[in-house]
Image (cartoon, rainbow, N blue to C red; front, side, top):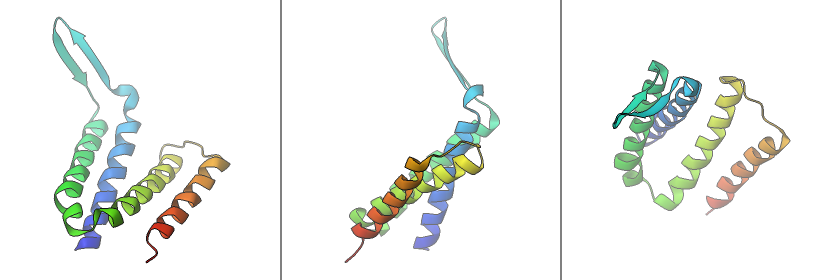
Length: 116
């Protein structure tokens, strides 16, 4: 169940970020006559809900089941890598050699942190 919770967290977190980014141009914030207006597309709302869900899973389950010094670098690194890959394949963003080197640096860092 622990691994499943991490997978669900990663899917919610990365999916939420990608959906919010994909609707970024359709999202508006405005203040009119003292009233704060927010306009978001459906994908952005779903992304926002997914991201809140990932926060709740992390806060109320994952950090209670794992040592924080162990799980935080792993989840953060994997999330960063998955966001980069999703932005390249889903959002058609480009990645340069520095991004590729950064991904490998993250992987090496996570590995070194977890050698016991």
